[in-house]
Image 1 (spheres, rainbow, N blue to C red):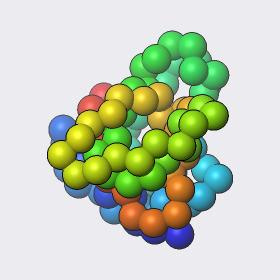
Image 2: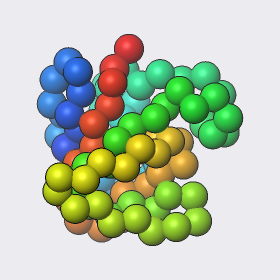
Image 3: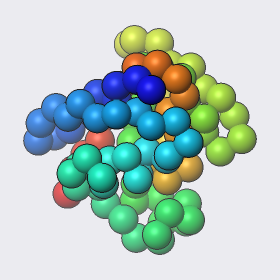
Amino acid sequence: MGTLTVYSNRRVYRLDAVPGRNLAEILREGGVALPKGCDGHGICRRCVVELRLGTFSVADDVVTVDRGDSVPVLACETRPEEGDAEIFVREE
């Protein structure tokens, strides 16, 4: 298990990047105010976050993001893989 560093418009969080859990679950459990609307079904698109570094499972694909890149995804459909990762989220 790695560390998920979350940069937000309010502060920086360091959370456990628990493999198998989606980003929406990890963020809410870590106290990050993530918008929600469809209870994790990927319909409302309110939980968009930006992947900034690391390897993630996004729907049925594996995405690796290098420093300096930014990939928008739905937190409810994205899971961190092994190792450290960084994301940006706009808190409510």
